[in-house]
Amino acid sequence: MNPFPAIIIGGPPHSGKSVLTYLLTRQLRQERVAHYVLRACPDGEGDWSQEAPPDTVRLLRQKGAFSKTFVDRVCRDLARRHLPLIVDAGGKPTLDQERIFDHCTHAVLISATLEGLAEWRDRVERHGLAIVAELYSTLEGSDRIDEKTPVLRGQIAGLERCNATAGPVALELAQRLQQLLAYTETELKSYHFSHAPTDLVIDLERLGDRAGVANHSWTPEHLPRALDEIPAAPIAIYGRGPNWLYAALALHAGQYAVYMFDPRLGWVKPSSLTCAPSAEPSVISWKIAVHQHYTWIDLSPVPSYLDYDEVNGTLLPELDPQRGVVISGRMPHWLMVGAALAYRHHPWVAVVQAQRYDQGIIVTSRVQEYRLGSWVALQGNPLSANI
Image 1 (cartoon, rainbow, N blue to C red):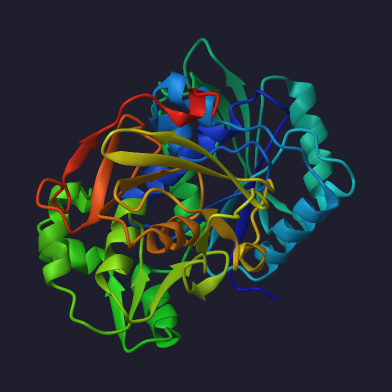
Image 2 (image 1 turned 180 degrees about the horizontal axis):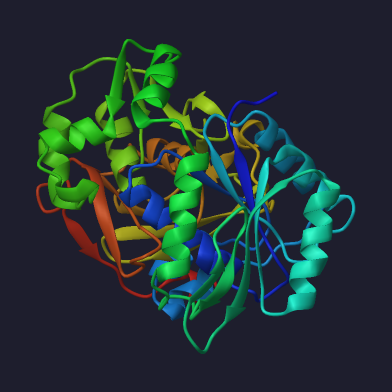
């Protein structure tokens, strides 16, 4: 039996599950509670969907469909989880999809109706989950705590995408989850570092301290100093950090092996990807926009729940080697880093964060005009282009 808790956030559609999940994980990160949010519904959302401008969210968000394969993969990753999990579930699970619940330990229920709460209470109790909270969600009004023990009950208000703030109920619930996600950061690091495949483990928290990062909020200006701290050797990267930081560290390693810690998979190498003129979309599709000094490629995983083994060996399109490459897309770090390594032969490579689709961050460069850690202002957007 897996020792780490998995707490499902459940309720009918449009109850505010994803917004509540974001508020909780943000608060837990501030309290330095080690955990990972597993999106167990194929709606293409993540933290970026609460932080990016609404127009960008509409372009990036890709509603998928549940399938047996999707459910199988979610169940597999839940069963082998490497960290305590918060699980963002879909609003209308079928009996087959409810297999996901069998791999969870606790439940937080939220609904805009009392009937919805009752329906979900019956659902999670059938699967033996311990209920942590039952919350009535409303856009108007204010938070109200009706009962704290044994189940947190009350009203939570204002769960609006991009505008929500953690009120009394969300803060009380985060405190409750902090007690459930009982593993200390030190304990988890000790365990995971002892299983690292290299002698040198890059702890992003400690690296940030040495590079002058305040409050663990990495900005591209920190890159040159951070890379100066890394010796030439095989590395294993551990911790929460932006996609461009992972890409820059991997590219800086050069010929040496790179591993990264994924909460679903454990220690893995970046995806093995190859550029070829014959490349055709398969498990990964793309859109390309060619500009004077760079080519912008936006990558999009085709399956709703991407499988690591399925991606390895995928072909990416060859691009003009005289131009820089800008890489964007909603994807796990191991895929983004794999793409950056595949295009490392270009004069420079930049990576886009979903929160800022108008700028790219230079993660490697052999050209003086495009310095490591600098921003590139991007023109147009391949997501909205018919290419």
